[in-house]
Structure formats: C-alpha cells, structure tokens
Amino acid sequence: MEEERKLNFLEEIIEQDLKSGKVDSILTRFPPEPNGYLHLGHAKSLCINFGLAAKYGGKTNLRYDDTNPVKEDVEYVDSIKEDIRWMGFQWEKECYASDYFDQLYEWAEELIKRGLAYVDDQSQEEISKGRGTVDQPGIESPWRNRSVEENLKLFREMRDGKYADGEKVLRAKIDMAHPNMMFRDPLLYRIKHASHHRTGDKWCIYPMYDYTHGQCDSIENITHSICTLEFDVHRPLYDWFIQTLGIYPSHQYEFARLNLTYTLMSKRKLLELVQKGLVSGWDDPRMPTLCGVRRRGYTPESLKMFCDKIGVSKRDQLIDIQLLEWCVRQDLNARSNRYMVVQDPVKLTITNYPEGQVEWFDCPLNPAEPEGASRRVPFTRELYIERADFMEDAPKKFFRLKPDGEVRLKYTYIIKCEEVIKDENGNVTELRCTYDPSTRPGAGEWRSVKGTIHWVSCESARKISLRNYDRLFTLADMSQVPEDKDYKDFLNPESLTYASAWAEPALLEDKSGIAVQFERTGYYVLDKDSTESEPVFNRTVTLKDSYKPE
Ligand code: ATP
Ligand code: MG
Image (tube, rainbow, N blue to C red):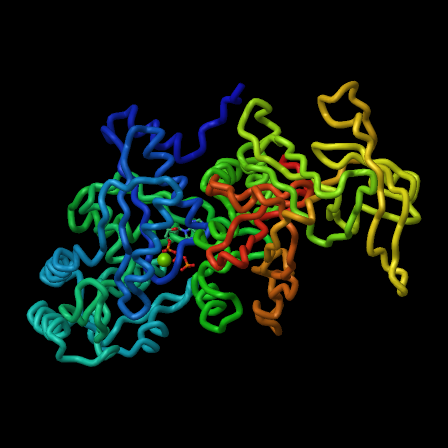
C-alpha cells in the first residue's frame, strides 16, 4: 500500500491558497532560458511545476525567458520542447518573454513618467562600484536626478538605436542605501545591438531578468511562480514591480536546486564541454542533460521516480547519484526485456551434443511476467560463455564453471567441464564439456546446481559494439574543485570504454523501445549510431547494486 506522504511546503501553500479562496485554481510556469539544453536539475523543476498543477487540477505554461539574444538560439528552443514532451508533460501555453517586450517597454515609460526610473550614463564598472556593499550604502549616480522629459527622450533614443552597447542603461529609482542590495537602483534595460531569435532587429534594448520575470508571470496570471533558492533575495523586488505597477499579484516561492554527485549542472560549463569537444555533444550519454540521459537509456519514469524520492526542500542538497541509478534499475528491472550477451568470450564445446543440431528454447522476455512474452534462443554444440565464469583453480565458494564442476547454462541444461584446452601461453582457448539431457527444464525432475551462467550459440551469435559508460567526473562534490584546479581536471578518463560482444539473435529484433537487460551484467540501449552491420549499445547502468535508499 502506498504510504501517505507528508505535504511538502509548496503543497501546503497551495492547499492553503485554494482553501482561503486566494486563488480558484493554480497556474504554474516552467521558465527556461533558451541558452542550452535541459538537464536533470530542470527535470526536478519540471516535476515540481507540472506535478503540482496536475495534483491540484491546474495548468502549467512553458515560458521561454528569452531576454538575452546573444546567448540564445532556436536550436535550444526546439530541444527544450522535445525534452519536456519526452518527460510526458503537456504545457498549457507556449509563451516567450519576448512576446511581452512592447508591454514591458510601456511599463518602463510609465515608471519614468512617475519619477521611478532614469537613464544612467555611467559605465558598468561605475555602476557596480556605486552600488556599495552589504555593510556600506551605495552612492547615487550623477545622472539620477534627470528630469522626466530628459529621461523619456534618452530612453526613446536608446530604443531607437542612437547609442552603442553599454553607453546608457535604464535604472529604477528606488533607494541607494537600501539594506537589500537588489533595491539599489536595479537595472531595467541595457543596450544590445544583437538580433533576437524571435524579434529579429526590432529591438536593440533588452529588459533585465528582474524587470522581466515577475511582470511576465503577472501578464499570464501565474499564481505560483516557483524558482530556485538563489532567487529569494530577488523576491522583494519581484513584488515591488508588481505592486508599483498595480498588476496581477503573482507570487514567487523558492526551492533548493538539485546538485548530484560526480556531475555538474551549470549550462555554461556543459556548453564548454561540448564546445571543447570533451564530450561528443549535448546528447553525449555521459552528460546530465535530458537528451544525454535519454540516449543513455534512462526513462522518464525513472527520472520522475527520482524527483519524487528527493522531494522538494528548502535547503541546498547534494544528492548521491546512486539514488538516480537505483531508480533507473528499479524501473528497468520491472519493464525491460532480457537477453544474453557475452562480452569476453571463451568457447565451450559440448562434446556429447550432436553436431549440427539446433534446439530452440522459449525463454521469458521478463521473468517478472512468467506468462508474458518470450523470445527464442538457439542452443548448439558450440557456445560462448564469459571468460570470467570459468576458473581453473577455483576457491571453494566459486559456484560457476571449474574443472570437473557442474553449472547450469541459463534456461537449458546442466553441463560438466571435462577438459580445459590452452594455447602455448597457457591461456584457456576452449572448454570441453558434456551435458546431461535429463536436466532439460520440464523434462523430468528438476535437479539444481549452485551456479547458473549465461551463454550464446557461436553459430547464431551476433556481434555488437558496446559503449560502457561511467560517471563523467571523478570528484563527488563538484562544487569543491580546489582553487588551483579547473573542473575539467576532474573529467573521468574511464567514463567511456569500448568493447565488442556476442549477443543472442533475438536482441536485434527487440521492439520494446526502451533499454534492455543483458542478463547478469547491466542495462543497455540501442544507440542512434548503430548500422545494419554494427549495432551499437550504450550501457545505461550496471546491474551490480549495493546501494539502498534510506
Ligand atoms: P544555469 O545557471 O545552468 O544557466 P538556470 O537556472 O539559469 O541554469 P534556466 O533555464 O533559467 O536555468 O532554468 C529554468 C528553470 O529551471 C528555472 O526555474 C530554474 O530555477 C530551474 N533550474 C535550473 N537548474 C536547476 C537545478 N539544478 N535544480 C532545480 N531547478 C533548476
Ligand atoms: Mg536562468
């Protein structure tokens, strides 16, 4: 039975707001800046925003926070939609901050007319110096007391392209000694002569985040604007713009961003990895991007399970990546099809099995569903097994194949190792065995042996290529990179190793569309680089798991 979960703080707020009649229904938004691909942190934000809306019968807008044309691109706009759809979320409206540029501009003129904004000619450096520090009040700009008429004229000239980048800015006129630094005459507009992916060359001034976000929420009647913790100092300013302009009162709430061990989530750094060719692209299966983990074989269900487990907290957290791996194992264990694949083969000949004979065994695709679908696996005289499943001088506790020992070949017979053939260097080249026909499952009384190993038939095995992926970085907490080092110094050189392997033929007929389990080794998913002659499989995660979530 599903355990009743305590409400998280956002659910508490929403239930309160619905009960008190403050809102009739909820409308959230997911506000990515289209300057990179979505990553696992965004998955958390998606699950929160879409999850809350779904739980309370509300809706969620997708809003692109596209106020910086220099870093943004339609490639990112498109990938974001694809990733959200893949996660299984459906947005209500597709919106863009740039849709509201006219309205934002009008409001800026309104603020100027009310004496609440002015054009400042100071340079970027002068402005930040003048802002003061937490303990020291700022100093007022020499341009702070321009007349309304002059400010209007200059602001219109800024809009009309009369000035170069950085020559002037529009600032709110609030309080240069305010204890919250955000209120020390924040920037509203800067000049950027750059083409925008949606508005083209219509604008050469672009609004700043703080001046944009709350008003966009308000225009859309967003009831609960949920963002990450670092924005809590921005909240008073968010409220100030909404109250000053007297527009729909959206409210902002903050939760802790997701940090995961052995990876990082900064778009700037992920972009650098792509641009420097340190990974194969945004969808490199080692990347924490949604397209990366998708290509790696992660399912939306596993990501949702993960987001559910980590919950919504108000304190910054570093989550163990093993929890994510545990979730994908849980999901794939329940759903994925099984196949036998041998990675490091040694030949095994069953000397008393007729030459040329092929027996087809019906094997379950998923043992959790004994009545479910099956695949057919050919058994022949010559097989491959994993080299590691044989040991010549085996310790007592070794229950796989050893000289004179018995083992069951999965789904089929018990065999006995009669002879070990080696080359001149002492390497095992062949294992000669006999099989016991009476041990065929269903043939009579079940006889059990301690070990069961996987195998493939040499004759029909298909050669495949494997990309065995591991963690991208070697440092658990990537926020702790020492001062004299760079985060790239911690790239894991073993994060990708190549191998080839022999697979039972049914693997290449798999139609499940999700990762499959290579029995006894791990979960693998067919990669888009596959060709008819060279199927390529990416390792999602190994089977081995000692991790237990709390
Ligand atoms: P970056 O700093 O890497 O550029 P960002 O926060 O600027 O990330 P946005 O595209 O602005 O990225 O984020 C869209 C939404 O996703 C925002 O609401 C943001 O708070 C949220 N988000 C981004 N990163 C994380 C994270 N690591 N954990 C949870 N939510 C996140
Ligand atoms: Mg951002």
